[in-house]
Image (cartoon, rainbow, N blue to C red; front, side, top):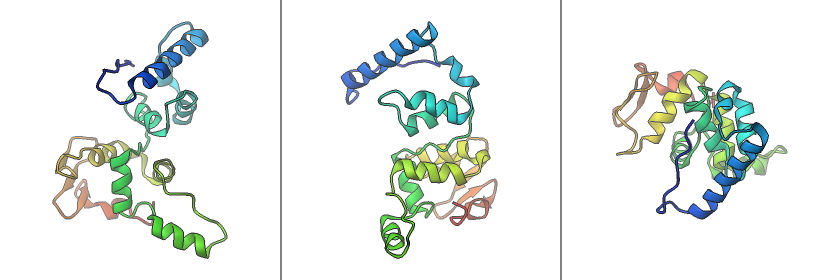
Length: 176
């Protein structure tokens, strides 16, 4: 794994630089080197635990590293995935949450990127997580028409299909 230096144009550069320096010092103290290659041998939950103990590293960053560097299926939820999950009905809206909480003795938690991550990751099929992350984060002009991931995804302006089947047949909102 490679650590990319932050440039001056990034927001919060000095804070992130301190976090990275602290992470590197901790890794060197604990392991004798500043490498995170050991993460590739860990399961998904262990990668999350190892990374999220560091300040500035949350569920999204851990999920991205799991998905792209460690080859562990994980449903990373950034701003775009969060927005699409709400629009597609894969997570309840704040209005639905309020209605449920008013009528139920078991309230739903606040609708955040982290709670939507937990919900989607627990319910989304592992074999589609990589492909769906790519299609949902390629925001140029909205959802992309073609995705070169493991599954053939297509968006014709009305519906998303996975390997020629409507997305709702592959994953329904009730499954999520």
